[in-house]
Image (cartoon, rainbow, N blue to C red; front, side, top):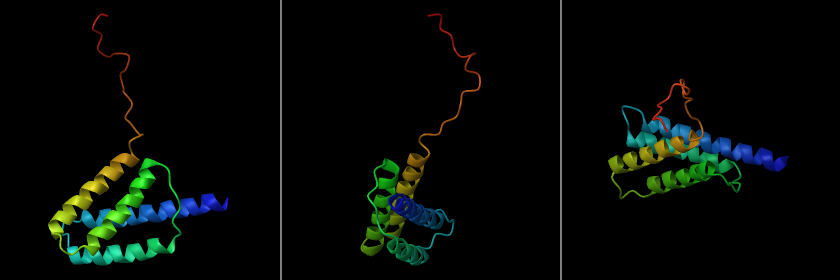
Length: 117
């Protein structure tokens, strides 16, 4: 049971980190300096949790995103606009991966197109 608790704790910490980054990135008045401060604070809380080996594509994506954000913040030679665009794109792809399994049910399946075959 301890493994499951540690796993859930780590995944929740990664999701909180992602949520914090997304809310900062999607803000209309994006300020790079404020974003860096927010990410540093979130990274400190993420580092308090013990990392666990994760198997699913979504959770691996969460880990990779956290590493990408940390690397982007540390490399100061990049353009803030470029970093913003890249991180926002990756965050959107990660959210898309999270909700990949859900779909919208067809309302009128029985009245669908019939081509006669």
